[in-house]
Image (tube, rainbow, N blue to C red; front, side, top):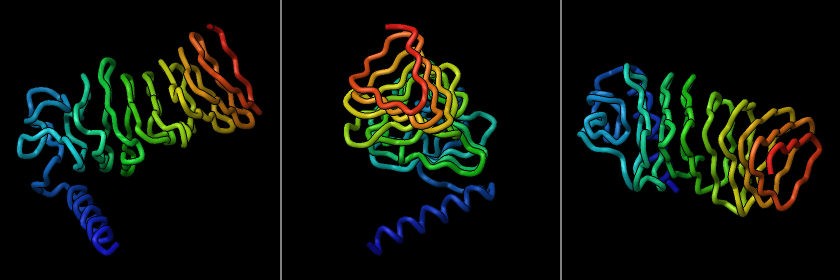
Length: 212
């Protein structure tokens, strides 16, 4: 609709303005002005307000980049805009529930998941998540959780009632996996060092299960 187009244009203009480094006051813009770098510290956001509900959280590069240290409440319908060179870290013990397709990446931005990212929809875990060691979880039985980058030591991959796909040529090691269907495309490799709960395996690549 025209309203949707207007909102999209407005979002792009806001991002462009923030990326210039100009002093702007945008709701839910990360400032890093608090005493720590916690997502849940109000003083780290413009207007001293932590993002919640159906809003856009803008994260720009600052001296203190945001960390999610515990559970983020009431943001499953929100969106995250990572601007140029920005990084969001979900630390061990931290968790974020969101439609991961609503995380938008600027140039050289990234999300490091050492805790848990719970996506309400199927999505692709690509190089923007490289270096993660935590849990990628999806609660979408209709659309797959797709892994399209290498991981040396994830804690868990989970789409218990749906599909997990390891794309061709990707090499993934994790401690645990749970899926109704595990698909491994040509030359894909997955090594599971611990518990595996797979109802169906479709493989043109290689799967190694070292645990149960």
